[in-house]
Figure 1 (spheres, rainbow, N blue to C red):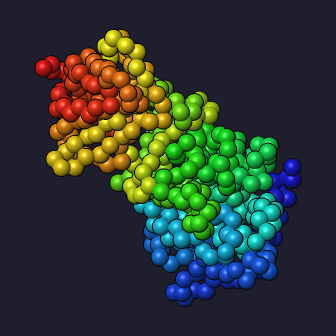
Figure 2 (figure 1 turned 90 degrees about the horizontal axis):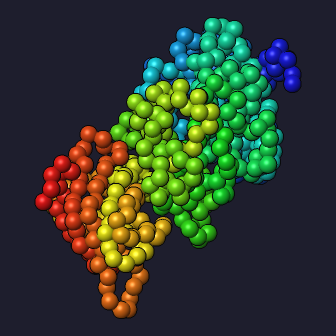
Figure 3 (figure 1 turned 60 degrees about the vertical axis):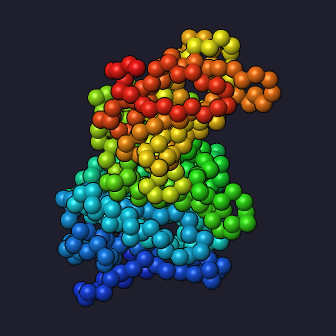
Length: 456
């Protein structure tokens, strides 16, 4: 492993390569915009750092790497977030750059530095871009060491890496012996990293705290767990609303992978809340086995996003945590989740799936627990997770159907001694209950929910 002094020298040499002084005028420095011709010919690595603060959110300033003091907007007493993009096969700037800059600035008073390594990432040969991640990491390592020399604290630095940029962030963290405050990996790239050792990819030792979001593990994303907490949206594969056939064109290839960025942007918006439920697998989560979050009391289940402070100590103690959640296909992505507990009393053993509708006036939303067959037998407690695409403020009626697949012969009755609905993301809302319901298989039954401390 190269010494710290050598790393700094290598980094500064690469940072200076092709660098031009930023003028004192009012012109803005924009992200490098390339096209397919550059990608066909191939690009050589050239890293630019664009600084944004609350005073210049719409006008980036390219940092002079050799003289940090010459950039008056760069206040090293503030926390600094580096945003690192990934592979750019078309050479176009990421469409989400301006959004993430503004949303990060809303979290706290930050230096937001956009790492523009489009020259290097824009190559039709993906393997060339992968090779450049190591060089770019030395580049940024030298710059961050210069920041530290000028008074910045490594613990106040947050690297946010997308796809290939997540591994680039990990390499920087490893170069700095894991002293970086935090690394966030948004669907770390899978190709060329699937069989990599921890030293060859992002891993929890690369920073004091590492959080990862997975959305495309069966294609462009990396399988497994690689942070102190790994969030898996919809199990980490096949995001709702993304095309299922190649006839959709480019979107078929990139939609699942890009969803990680849009979910993270959504989480930075204070009106969007995505709760992750610690669990061993997505199937266990869907079956309602992981909805308590006892390890995180008195805090609730961890939320995806920028502020993981309430859960950080617990997550560091647990070392590696997997957290699962489901989303809708569109903004604000959040589903309304209920834990449904039923006590059944029926003479014959039946297997089936449950369909639940919540009604509010003429509006309704439906949840289908058709990923598993539930067992209904005499005096048995059954728990399931019901997730609804819409949030209804006042539920006036609930309708249910238990589908057993029985299409011939008599319909058997299923008696529910009690059914209780517990809202998971809205703990201040009252629990809804109903007692002693007779259901006929494959037939819908509607009822008015009651407070759980009352009986008919």
